[in-house]
Image 1 (spheres, rainbow, N blue to C red):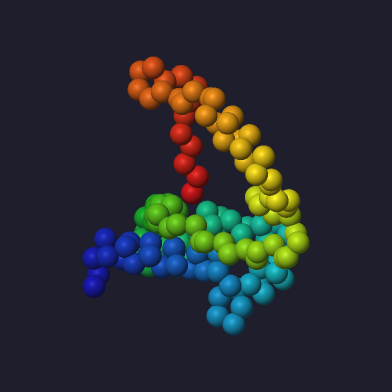
Image 2: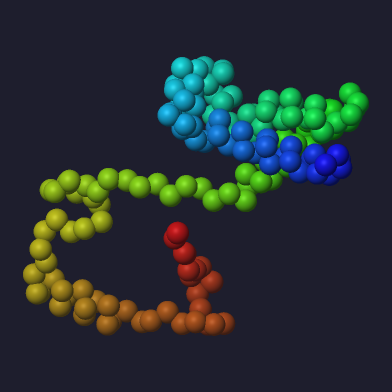
Length: 149
């Protein structure tokens, strides 16, 4: 199919796919991971870690198949990179799985000592003595609800 819009859509998807592979994935047999490790923390290594930077360089040769003239090539180059960046914004960040703390490590969330019955009674009494926050127009202006994902 030789429709310009079709070439652009294919080019945008190809630009996103290759740029995402280079910037965020390990690749088959960890080939891309090894490439990024070989490039190190220098200029080239930082360029490969940046999706927006990678999309510019990936879009350049793909734009040759989209644009028919030099002017169209420049516009297609920037448009393909821009489309890849917009696609990247729609992708959710990966879920990170972290190791649980080892037995005996303080993870900052759990109590490390047992509470006595007296401590619990004191906490309940303190809670009962505090007035409940009011909702609606009477609510304190600095009270807010924070949702943590």
